[in-house]
Amino acid sequence: MASFCAVTRGWAVYITLDQHFKDGEGDILLTPDMMSEGEIDENVKYLVSEIEKAGKQAKTKLKKANEKIERDGLYPRN
Image (cartoon, one colour):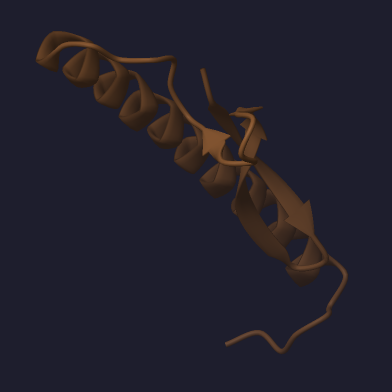
């Protein structure tokens, strides 16, 4: 299963693919093999919840980065 996380690079925050698998053709696989609509629904639900978690992490990291930028005086205050 794929998972996502948030990382900070400089002043920006990114959501990255934290864990995945590749098949023999080099494609990145986000899910295990799926053979039914139910499996597709379950895996999509899981991926959505993982990306929502990463979004929350990204917002927390962005808040901390902005606080540091403001504290260090790296941009003018409004």
